[in-house]
Image (cartoon, rainbow, N blue to C red):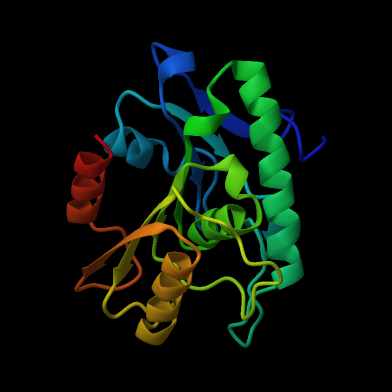
Length: 207
């Protein structure tokens, strides 16, 4: 299996009009798989193409897109490797399935949300925007400042989510805006979970 092409394990749910529909790249959280966010994707945009790959890193029997160390820090080299693999996977999938590569949004939860953000940072040409649930900053310092003008970012976190501390969320919003992205921050009163109200609001805004 080549992780960069469509032989990678994934789910593809085409829209009625593949070429003229938005595509949602669905990136699951730790311990889930390529089937986990299909319902979320359909709730966000019932008319979208859905493309959902499985994370290639296996740790303690759980699939993920990159590792998080015991001290809470991220394997940044692994994040970069995953972003490159996802960018190549998207390009090959667009050619194989015939969707418009310029209208792809990455939608992720937790580990997958960080994967979505890092893909936007490292390969901004691959995405129109991201929808990140339960996310935080992926990099302590970005090696190359991205140009995110014209990109849209939704960040949907919980007020008491230890994975997404307030200071890191504030820095993340400031960074994305500083790089030119249009950012909307949504907060719910709970922890590390996806709020249905956030799904509804984002879906309505996407149109």
